Length: 160
Image (tube, rainbow, N blue to C red; front, side, top):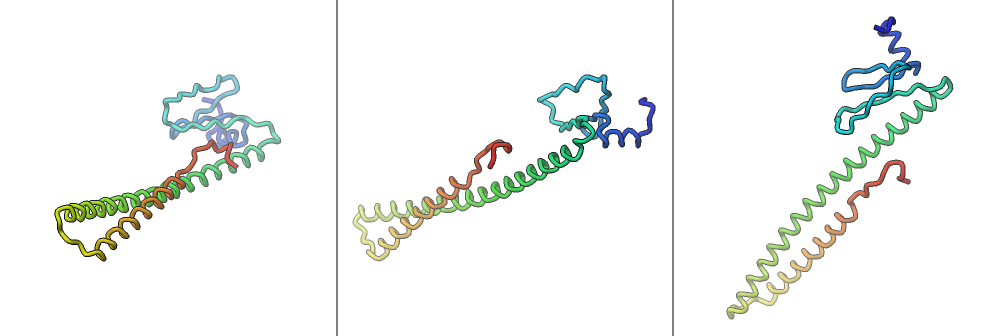
């Protein structure tokens, strides 16, 4: 169709003599007289436009793209690690909240027994109160850790 071999076409794209657009698993070669492709925001395919560069700017553009790709990979790695940490903290918080509910239920049961005139060993009562305080402190600490570990969403070009 273009009058050149596939290898020559790939070489011209690689050397930035022609502009190519990736559409899914295929490539579209834009000839100098072609208008730029329309960008469909609803499309889920990832398209990459490789613009034609002047002769001296190849290495600069490649270095910039490589640094951007490295930055995106690093941010994705950090995001994944933070998501795992948040999940861990949420599960610990849920466990501690369940333990606090059980302790509160036990406390209410003891209070009802005391209201009904039942005798409670003072040592057992103090142990239950200490356990309730310990659980409340642990729940508070976990809630603070969870609140402090939520990542702040910022644009990559504004992070420093």
